[in-house]
Image 1 (cartoon, rainbow, N blue to C red):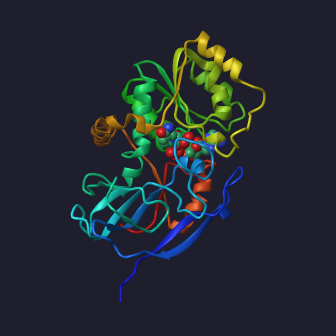
Image 2: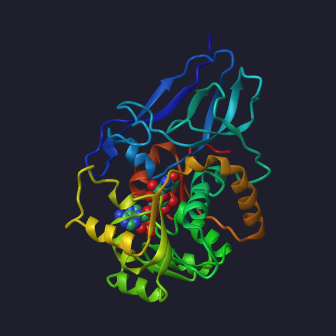
Image 3: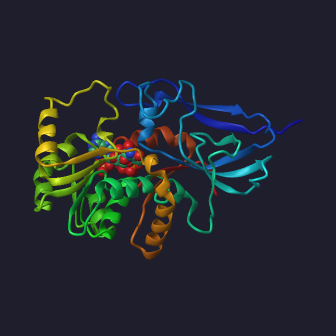
Length: 343
Ligand SMILES: NC(=O)c1ccc[n+]([C@@H]2O[C@H](COP(=O)([O-])OP(=O)(O)OC[C@H]3O[C@@H](n4cnc5c(N)ncnc54)[C@H](OP(=O)(O)O)[C@@H]3O)[C@@H](O)[C@H]2O)c1
């Protein structure tokens, strides 16, 4: 008799209209088949929850395929090899995989990266030493092009990407102003990460506070949010300002045809021309050839104490939907990770 592994997984139950709800997801259990030659069985230890997953829940044309209805929710994971019929991997190896919202998965080894648990805490492969950290590094260097003395403003600044953007901006000598939701997050940016200023985007006088924190205007705005945060930043942009457009989380729950009041486009286009702005969208993987530089530099900065990180770890795969809904409303504080199993 074979000893079959049962995977617990969370699938997309229905496509949300507006905000996702608990019923957008469904938890299921399924027995996995036996391994074929060349395959390995992975036990997921950590699952990364990221804003892009909201886009995968829609059936709209994008840079990536949507998750199918009844399909396992997509996601980056850190996993342990528990069985192997692949000569490259042995039981006990720890890998970065893309196994999604589930406890176990079968892989043929393609696209996996072995992690050294002695080099860094393995969960960092999903955050500061993973996709979000690299996004910060690549977007800031290639599009933000920071110069010492310039003013850098970053949105969603206490999060996985934003906190790295601000700290890397300090390493490059910029004056850094973070925008975050609430006094705890703002205090963390100033007191623990060394930002020059931090402004609460929920404050009634947010726009005025931002203007007074940027007396010389804004040279680089690292856009993670859109909405009212963009509106406050936009008039403060200096000539030749650079705007890496990394994310627009304030709009992820809107349908594709949603409009934010009167048409802003003519004013934005006029400013792009008049101020010679560079507003450039990007998806981090276009800079994939810079990943080795990133790992080298980021590991050094972490060791020197110049690049710090905060993880918001939630226990239990069954809590992933609720944690994800919280991410879309700013309830996470730091890189949001689900601990699926104990190391
Ligand atoms: N282009 C790429 O390749 C790429 C790669 C990774 C991530 N991204 C984007 O980068 C951004 C940040 O991602 P992350 O992983 O670092 O997430 P995160 O910042 O750790 O978490 C999301 C944060 O966004 C803020 N937020 C949520 N809804 C908001 C709203 N309506 N208005 C203002 N702020 C809101 C909340 O912070 P507050 O409490 O501070 O409001 C929340 O904590 C996202 O837009 C994401 O899509 C892009």
